[in-house]
Amino acid sequence: MAKHITLDDLNAWTFDQRQTFYRNGLARFDNAEAVRLVEMLVASGLPFRHGKEIAHGDREMKALEAIVSSPYNEKLLLEAAASGKPPLGAIEPLMVEGLGEDYRADNGATIAAGYLIARRLYALGFEKGNGQKMPDGSVAKTAATFRKKRA
Image 1 (tube, rainbow, N blue to C red):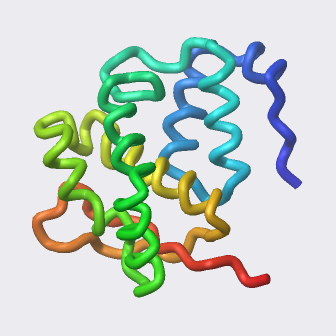
Image 2: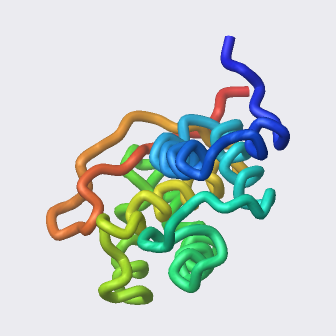
């Protein structure tokens, strides 16, 4: 059984441990608990990044959050999920349009986008499915699929 991570644990960790935890949490958003742990780290106010990668609170992250949380874009996410396609594929063109050169893999924007989509869909009662190759021309190479949780 995995150890339950607390705020005290985060306080005891080194900067490098928190940075690794944050990166892994964004990249491996396996379930709502993983999302909760990343949110706990961000809310703690503890340092966890050097500044090269986008993170919660940054202008780029706020722009991605606005795109993911838009009611119109939620419809696109839900349609993609229902058809078994990665929801990121449905809205990534909007992210590219909104962020321009700031939407790229090397600064963590593609990973952050996947994380934000997962957070949104978990809140709507979905669970993560398999990863799939993104459409040709996409910035992200692969992205997760989602399915509605069974009752």
